[in-house]
Image 1 (cartoon, one colour):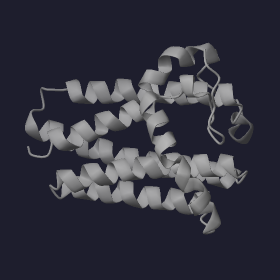
Image 2 (cartoon, one colour):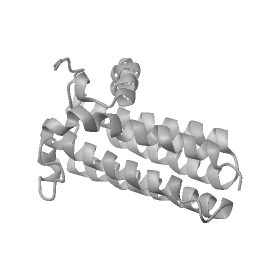
Image 3 (cartoon, helix red, strand yellow):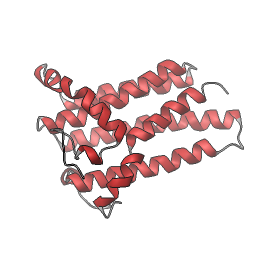
Image 4 (cartoon, rainbow, N blue to C red):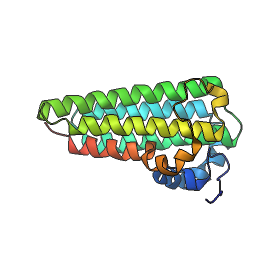
Length: 194
């Protein structure tokens, strides 16, 4: 397996989620500019959270296109914050916790919207909720394998790590957060009306 790694990425490119890899290649040229302007990873995390929460608001307001665009922007910024922190050695326990807390808040808002729209449209059609739960669990497992393989659990601690074998990255990479984000964009656009 190829070991090409972009400086600041957790893993070699061959083990990254394909969508995440494309985004990292696209945003890499921006990192030096952000760092040069004094932008910190925590600032990017807060901007990511603002975009994601604005997306959830747009979902409930019946504006699917801005909601989808803001969700993608929030996700891109979520990639940038960790990338920036690792590239310029600005990782911190606070930043790690802030990143995960804001991700959880945004996902909870979006899942609330999806559940509301699905049950409003047809309470007997549960497949979108089932796919959401399955993809969310798969993405969580993938992130745990990423942490184990990259040794970034030094910040979080390995206690309770779901992934027991980093070799699972060869297949979990296709079910990572990039895939989950693509699914979320589909749901935002598909469930725009009840």
